Image (cartoon, rainbow, N blue to C red; front, side):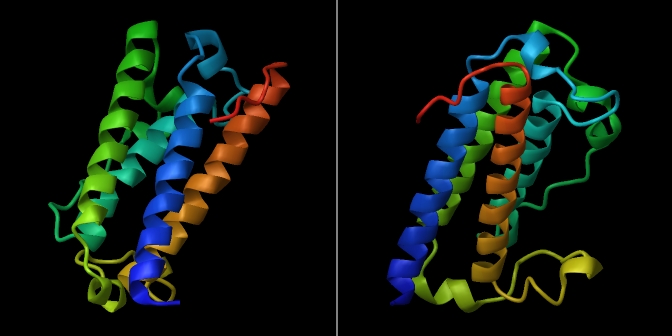
Amino acid sequence: MTAATRLATLHRQLEHHYRVVLVLTEPLDLAAATFEIAAGRPSIAWCLGHLAHNVRTVPASVCDGNPVGETTKHELPHFGVASAADWTSLLGEWRQATADALEGLAVLRDEDLSKPLTVEVHPAFRGQLTSRERFLHGHLFHVAWHAGQIGTLRAAQGLDWPTP
């Protein structure tokens, strides 16, 4: 498999996973978005906020973009979503973050995949995230993990599993 094929495959996989997350979250109302299986456990809103923040790190990490600062919203219930307007805003943030990430990836060249990340890597991940390609594979896994978590939270509420 050539680097061009790997890059194109990663782009397509991320685009698909981003779309799956949107399909799973977009039709939900505030009650469904903030449902918790147990008190203090992540809700769909928390998962989406967490993912949106992490998706914003993609251009900074692999495309020489501006670094993304930390957020304190991880500690907030539902990532700070407390109203229908907050939920609508978070869905908009997701759409914008994923569009920006995919746009940033579109300018990468084949040889960029083997380069190191353009930002400092958290010490816990330095051994694994040794290249931009490894970062993108880890990011893809992370999005898939939370898509499954969102699906589980939907199922716990008796909601269906829509198809993108």
